[in-house]
Structure formats: C-alpha cells, structure tokens
Image (cartoon, rainbow, N blue to C red):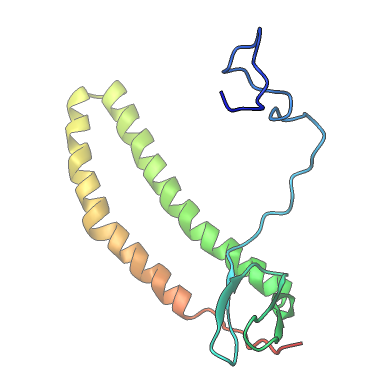
Length: 148
C-alpha cells in the first residue's frame, strides 16, 4: 500500500469502479476517421494527418489543411479499398460454407480437398489479388495541398 492511499475495506480489488463503467446512451459514436494523409512540408518535415484536420509545421510554421481534398473523392477511395477487402473475405467465407456443407451432406472425405483449395488460394489467388490491389493503389490520385 502506498502512503496516502486509502485502504479498500469491504471492496473486492477486481470490481470495476463506476468511473470506468460505460454509461449507456450518454455518448455518441463519432464519425469514423479514414487513414491518415501523408503531408510533406516544403521544409522537408513529413507528418501523417487525419482527413479534415490541420497541421502546423513545427519547423517553418506553415499550416496544412487536409480538408482541401474533395470529400467525395477521399471517401470514394476509402469505400473502394474497403470493397476490395470485403470481396476477399466473402470468397473465403463462401469456400468455407461450401466445403462445410459438402462435408456434412455428401461425404466427409471431401473435407480432404480443403488443403488443395487453400494451397490454390494462397499460391494463385492471393498474389493475383495483391497485384491488382497494388496496381489500383498506384493509380490513385495525389493531391497538392497549399499551405494556408
């Protein structure tokens, strides 16, 4: 016990205090932030700034505002990148459901084909998908922000 600390008489030390319990209905979920934008100052300083926020360079004092990027374009890109991930997860879940259903209904031996399908997935499909995603990422626009 630390000097000045009050003793915990009658309290279990693992109980959660009311101060740390979430209150239902008291807060709102803030808008989801996208990934940070890399801002390169003319003096050479680089910082990752969330979309819509401003950053003042500590070296030269220039102020950069990421809200200069068109909102529709930025969130459209975020939506497109999310869709790329959703497609891969959807295909993986679809394969799992198909193999699970086949193993339960047709023959349990069909589950032995799963390693072959997973090898195909990892050796052929995922590298192809990553190349496609990288190609699309390289084609994305880059914006030239002006200091305020």
